[in-house]
Image (tube, rainbow, N blue to C red):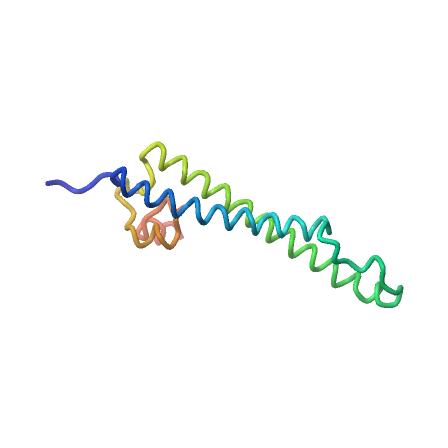
Length: 125
């Protein structure tokens, strides 16, 4: 029997469940970051004394910048996970886009949106 060229439907189902789990958590985190950017959680300094407000403005700006970066990063992660789901549906999930070989299960469990095997990833640098 030759080398395996794709994961079985059962294996793809297992990966899909893992991806959906991670996607749910990522979307919850994204919503949290987005809420902190829009201050819709009601935890701001609008009703505090002016002196305290001046001290907090710098920290609030920095905090918003950080939340913005985290939200952007989280959105990118969500997009990668959604693309991985499409690959599951197309039955191309887990195939290295450089070598065409299967990406080891251990790597996919750690990085479910991976599109490169470790050899291809190392050569990328």
